[in-house]
Amino acid sequence: MPTLDELMTKLRNEASGCYSWSNGGGDRYAAHTHNYEKVLYCVEGSITFVLESEGKQLELRPGDRMVLPAGTVHSAVVGGAGCTCIEGHR
Image (tube, rainbow, N blue to C red; front, side, top):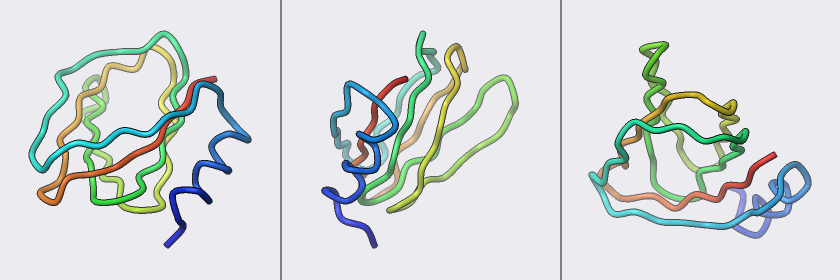
């Protein structure tokens, strides 16, 4: 598995405003959008993003990457063990 430092180096090569965040198991994010393209890597644990208008779910585990286009309506549910992710925008 890639380390946080390795993933952050990758992320900084493709996005700006990079930062990390963590949540406890079962935490939820209500449906929302961003006015920028989000690039996200899962570092630890798991999180499932729900692409509301497409009716799709995308589970991310350590090392997985997601690019979310600007304006995409999405929500998320953190896995039982919690998660740590890093993200940036472009």
